[in-house]
Amino acid sequence: MSLDPAVAALLKRNPDQLVPAVVQDATSREVLMLAWMDDEALARTLTTRRGTYWSRSRQQYWVKGETSGNTQHVREVRLDCDGDTLLVLVDQTGPACHTGTATCFTDRTLLTDTPRTEEGR
Picture 1 (cartoon, rainbow, N blue to C red):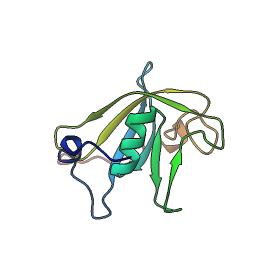
Picture 2 (spheres, helix red, strand yellow; picture 1 turned 30 degrees about the vertical axis):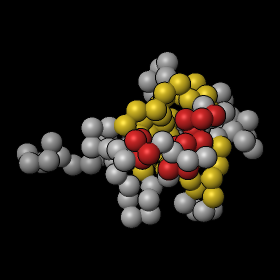
Picture 3 (cartoon, rainbow, N blue to C red; picture 1 turned 120 degrees about the vertical axis):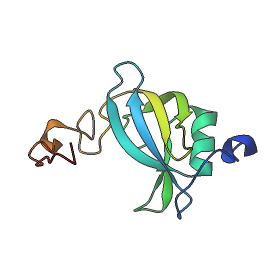
């Protein structure tokens, strides 16, 4: 699969040719996870409507839920104003996080003890 050249021209990729994809529940709007996409992963996602990402650690494509059964049906994909981040709105079946939690952003990762200064509110 190849990405539509008009869409590809809008993307600003990092040096590894990847774009971060913020994955959000289409109904609740809860942020579920962050993944990475290259042109091929985005083309596959847009074509199949299944969340398809590039694994930086395994250096291969992965379809969310292919092994776990915790699938993502992609409703829409949006590009931010700078062209350097994707927002993927999904219908999530099962937990989104590989740890088994609904989201990768759980309460235990809340950074509330960070001191604030007048300059860095």
